[in-house]
Each structure stands twice: as structure tokens, then as C-alpha cells.
Amino acid sequence: MVQKINVAQKFRTLADQWRAGTIHISSSSQMAMHPAYQQIIGMGAEAIPLLLNELKLRPDHWSWALRAITGEDPVKQEHRGKLSLIAQDWIEWGKEHGYLS
Figure 1 (cartoon, one colour):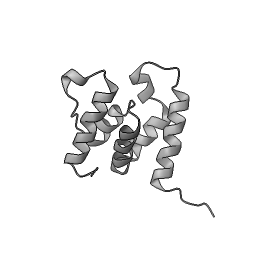
Figure 2: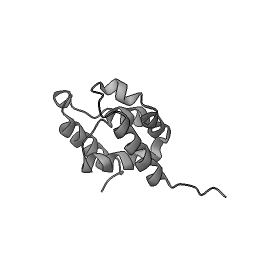
Figure 3: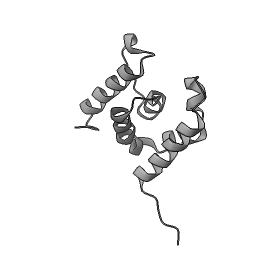
Figure 4: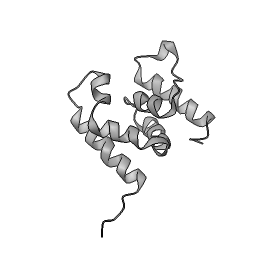
């Protein structure tokens, strides 16, 4: 019998695969096209709190996935290109929308 992997475990596995597979890529659009990243987007709304918690721990290129899933873009114009500030904008958005406390 195949054991069902919980959402958090699936996310962690895919995030690790994505990081390992994109370590030498500098293009955020190429990073977002990685199969593991696309699978995270495919997880839909279940991935939102996991992505936001990931940004709290370690700012990274998760904005593309969050925009794709939520249809929103809370990143301030002056923060574009600055991962820590982009993460901050998304974390604030997550708190406002009940994904983070």
C-alpha cells in the first residue's frame, strides 16, 4: 500500500529539489520553470502558508509561485529585486489575509 505524503512533506521535498536543481541559475524566470517549482504552484492554496513560512525562515524566489497561486502581487515597486524586502511584503500580505499569525 502506498503511503500518502502530507502536504508539508511534499512541499519540503519539492523545495529541496528546486533549490538543488537551480543552485547555478541566476534567472528567476528559469528558476520558476523548474519542474519542482511548477509542482509547488500546482499544489495551489495549500502551498500558500508553506511558502510564506519559508519566506520567514529564508527569503528566496517564491514570489512568482505566490503570484501564480493567489493572483495578487503585494510587492512594493521600490522593493522589486530585493529578496528580503519582497519576502517582507509577502509576509505582511499573509498576515493580512489570515495565512500567518
